[in-house]
Length: 177
Ligand SMILES: [Zn+2]
Figure 1 (tube, rainbow, N blue to C red):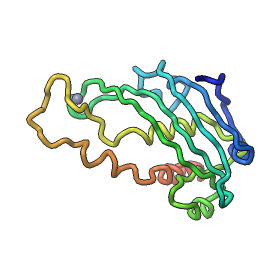
Figure 2: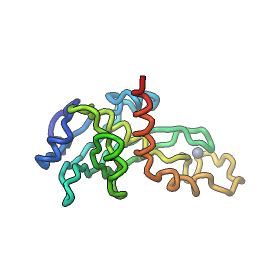
Figure 3: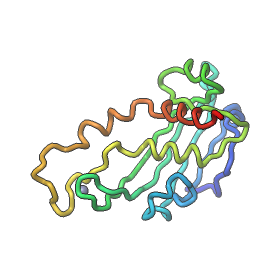
Figure 4: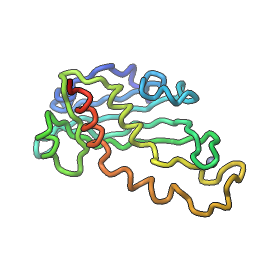
């Protein structure tokens, strides 16, 4: 259910004030930070984002960013197809103080311009949705099956603790001259 081309830039504050939505499709190939996924460049990215103000006045974004990426299995090194469905729960923050003051249920989205590139947000959500260790449930050639301990068990969830905040910090570092 596409609603036409997605905007390249968006004004998150205005969208939240107006209760706007961003829905549509883009291809993985249009997201520069996903170029390393060579086999997935034609893959569709389904975007469904709803902007709102919550009861406390926070500008927030809820929705999903879904796509399919082929990665390398870290156990057998064969291609592994991952269906990713990133759940988005963001609150906009203008500066560090606001970012720290956000309720914990939100991931912060640091806003540093009136018009924010949509691609940045999509790339970030997709990269964060990747498991820390990607392995086949059952590797196709039975390689290393004797290795009973599954490295994916422990790490897939624990690594996801508020990663957006970490990236926001990294981004901030990038901007320092
Ligand atoms: Zn494998």
